[in-house]
Image (tube, rainbow, N blue to C red; front, side):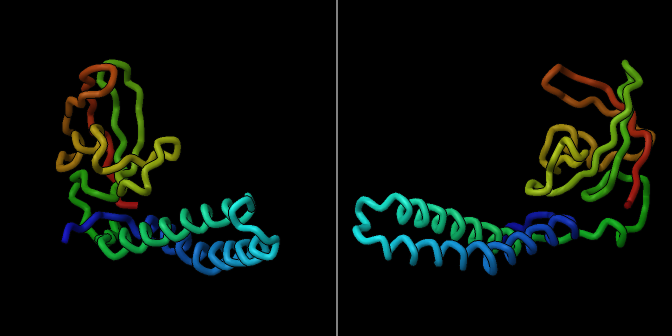
Length: 158
C-alpha cells in the first residue's frame, strides 16, 4: 500500500474534520432528511433531494478522509535530526538570485498545501526542486515564468 506523507498538524486537521462530519454534520443531515420526508411526496420534494445530495457529499468526504488517514505516514519534523537538508515537513527560506526576493515555505502533504499560508505540497515543482538539497545550495527551479535560480538560505525544523 502506498503511504502518503502528512505533518502532525495535517493529520490533526483531518481528524478534527472527520469528527465534525460524523458528530455534527451527519446527524444534522439525517434530521433534515427526516423532516423533508414528513412533507409528503418525495418525487417533487426539493428539500429532500437537497438533503440527500448533502448526505452523499458528507459520506463521500468521510470515506475520503478515513482513506487518507489510514494510508498516511505522519512525520514529525521536530523528531528528525537537523542536518541542513531540505526534507518533508521542514520550513525553508529561499532567495531568488536575480531579484534578492526572499520566500519562506513549509513543505507539507497535498491536503495541507496552502500557498497563501506559505505551505507547499511536497509534489509541487518548487518542493521537488528543493527536497534533498542542503542549506547554502543553489537550485534552478522550473516555474510558470521560466527557470529561476534560488539559493537555499535557511532550513528549519519547526
